[in-house]
Image (tube, rainbow, N blue to C red; front, side, top):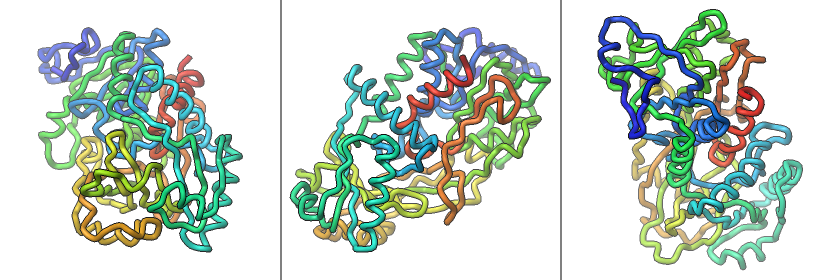
Length: 418
């Protein structure tokens, strides 16, 4: 049968015998959340707390195996994003909700602050622009400081000027997601892992989801989807929070206007860790001026004191839809990538020693804009965009998606699903 969590899918999905008849069985459901990343978990928790019957379908064996567990684990302030954008609004609101949630539940986190640094004269005006943008977005406590003050704060740092953000921080994403799962389940939400939504179709105004076991999709091994699903689910509410595959999944919702679905692009980011660090060289997050496609190779500290550098931006293509659905991306980190990291890091950390970077991990950003194009905003689509009652598509939830997760959930449930 379709894979179940310890809580079980109970009546939402039937037994294997029903799936073996040679045609798809059809089941009704209240709310289906597709994807158990941090945003999907936050939405599921919010819906369940509101009394809805929630079923979360996740293609992986457990929650948070994609972008949610392959990022910098940074709580962003809301500085970088255009005023009046969803990214700005959700980041500022989400940060407040996230700190409050983690404090109340003793989830490991730290409001350690961030220095965004200008290392050359041409970058100083960009720093001023960031401060203005952050202030317009409602970020409190931002302060410009000269290089000498910043370097007194961080003796290993080299810069001409810095923007200090005291509300930026770090969070243990696994502990956060574990808490969201627990609270969703405590309010009756059910999780079915190893379960892939491969598409769907409209009948009237009802969305019928096409569902199969991940192992059966995997068995095809040819980049093709099965001709027939094992199960059709007919929910009242569908939240497509499938992350990297969300736009591709929406394109497989037959009957949905394809013109409202943005193109999907993927940008890999590699991380390296600092070897032999009994005493971390920095106590704050250190960020350079943002680059095309990302925020630059920055310094991140985790809650165990490990120092990480990254991510870079490597655009990738040629990924077939099935590989995207199954998160079959190349997450390897070649030691040769360090050659590009050393000069970028030494602009602000000149004492970085040769041979001190070790391959860490990598992640994939779900982008909606191509290289050299302006960065896209989050896309949150409801009925007013595509005409399907109860369907919410979440596209391009890259950074600051982790910080924004609870605000996105708050917005989705209040605007579309109440």
